Image (cartoon, rainbow, N blue to C red; front, side, top):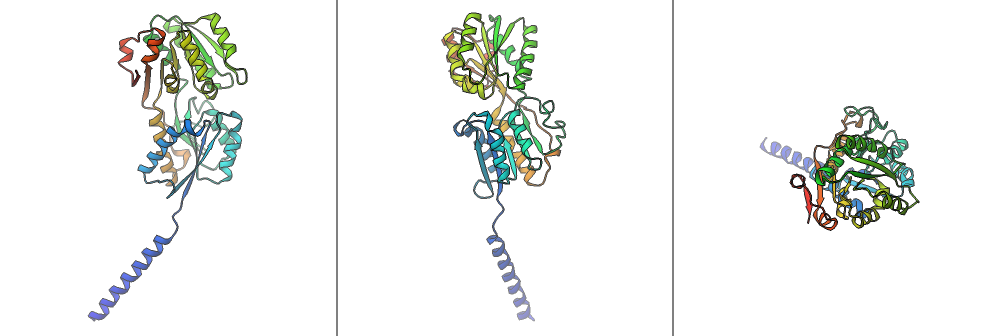
Length: 330
């Protein structure tokens, strides 16, 4: 009896070991994630790295159980549809769109079934027709919105607080972006309550920045408001150079403008938002439907001030504003 029992135990152990080996030898499913960016790899690397690190913390490691297909437009707006179509043809499990409304619409029009996670959309995604509501998006889209339009008034308010002497502000915008047109309304509304005069100047693709430079040189505003977007990024160096040459206090939507020599920026904390993308990837890969995952709005905002620029253009930042800065460039 003892021999029979021992034999049974040995057989059970052997069967368990064989099953474990067989399971270990089974190829693990590798989830494929598409990543669509309007920028170039160098500019996008910091943002995509934040997502990769956050995914790793959740157990998703590139090359082991996930593969990421990157597609970069190098700031060429006409590539949105083609790059989105490429990712759909690859049959990825999820598409992360690290761009604005134009990129989201291009991806949405390309697939109605592959889950899409948005990050970087500054306009209201409900108003823009991307989703049904923030609480219940419906369809195959979810993710995060940056509220860039809603922050337009706050940026102007901070510029006025930082440099109280300014009385007139030139607002640059891209007429091809609906978000810019809506943002102008926010800025104009804030200007009235702040007692500021604002005038908007359009920058168009293919026309260069010199036309606007000539006009602004005659207008001679006291300050400069610069929204985001691919066109503004393309002309960032010229915009910053103009502001420095003319000693104009400037407020940018993106901190890259401040890193390049602009005076200040105010926006949603980009790093935190991109890290949050991993949460959506995890939920969807575990079976959640994008339609049921609420779209999140930013909880943390970042004020960046460049004191080197302040010194160069001869302004002193108000101490109460400087004390609130999340990052100061000295």
